[in-house]
Structure formats: C-alpha cells, structure tokens
Amino acid sequence: EVQLVESGGGLVKPGGSLRLSCAASGFTFNSYSMHWVRQAPGKGLEWVSFISSSSNYIYYADSVKGRFTVSRDKVKKSLYLQMNSLKAEDTAVYYCSRGYSRSHFDYWGQGTLVTVSS
Amino acid sequence: EIVLTQSPGTLSLSPGERATLSCRASQTVSSDYLAWYQQKPGQAPSLVFSGASGRATGIPDRFSGSGSGTDFTLTISRLEPEDSAMYYCQVYSTSRWTFGQGTKVEIK
Image 1 (cartoon, each protein chain N blue to C red):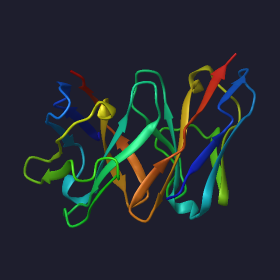
Image 2: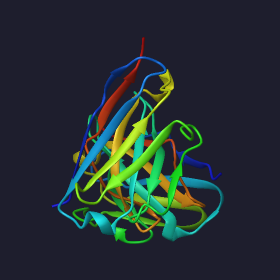
Image 3: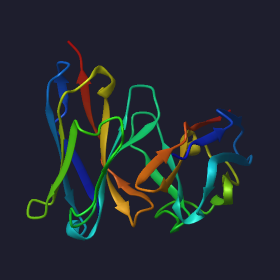
Image 4: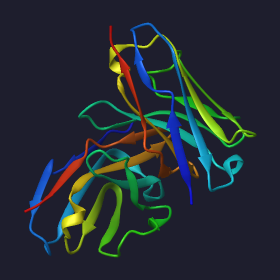
C-alpha cells in the first residue's frame, strides 16, 4: 500500500524558516517523481514544487521560487521542502504527492499545516 | 500559463441523478495531461480520473471523464450520498501543474 506521511509543520513567524518532510513507503520511491501541493484555509489547491525521480529536474511555482527548496533522499525514501523567508500567504496545509509521469498526482499524503503568523 | 475554469461552482442534486462537472482550459491541452480529484472535508484530495490512466484504483464505474481541446467533463452517472465532495480538475503544461477552482457537489 502506498503511504506518504508528512511532518514538520507548525507555527512560524513571518520571515522564518521551516523544513517539511514526507516519508514514503509501499512503492519504489526512487522510480517516481514527487510533488508538494498546498491548500490555504478554505481555498483551492496550488501546486508548489516538483522533483524528478533522479533529482535532475526541479520546478517551482512562481509564488515560492527563490524561497523554497525541494530535495529527496533515496536512502531514507523521503521528500523534503525547505521553506525560507516565509510569508503570511504561505499559510496552508502542505501535501506531499506522488507524480504519475509528468501528468498528475496519483497518491497524496494527509498533509501538514504550516501557519505563518506573528 | 494555462487557466482552468470549473463550472458550476456548486451542484446540488438528489441521489440517483446525473452530475456533469465542467472544466474549461484557457488554451488547448492534451487530454493525457488532464485529471480530476475528489476532496472531502478534512481529507486530502484523491485521484478520481485521468486522461493518462483512466479511472483511479477503487473508483466506481459511475465516474467517467471525457473531453478534448479546451473542454473537459467529469460525469457521475448516478449520484450516491458518499459522492458529496469538492472536485478539482488539474492540467500539466510546460513544467507547471495547475488546478481549477473546484466544483462543490452537494447531495440533497
């Protein structure tokens, strides 16, 4: 069974940093691309970042480019999102998801809440 | 950047009725790159249908997707109470993944 479990969310002040983690199991992690997708309270879904299976290709939404860094660890079978210079508008539930080809997201974690507030 | 517009915003129907959810893209997209997700309150989204791989695992055959070019549709042929949820369409294009704003399906 595919499982994605996010952690690392919490309350952080504007300008602060946070590192999210996503532990993957139930599939060959090294063979799949991975994404971060977020959802602000009461709002829709917003794609945040993509990392290919080999980490050769990395893309970011314009809203986070230059502030967020995605990475993965093949040994730990984990995905990470380093978030710096956080803003109030980054407040959201952050979901880790598995990529199907370049097309869509076929499995999702339960999400971790990030709140940016003074 | 492709913009996806979903309609209607809310669909209120009775059990057994047919639900038709629309997703319109601002430019032509490949149906292989169009997908639909279901999200129930307090839960993560889950894949319902994709052009690339059809109905997702465990999704009943009353759910179907269709469309081409700029107009795509998710159809729920006979609504069940458990189909009450928010539904999002999503497209991939040029290293960007974009979601529509969602359609809320309510069961009367």
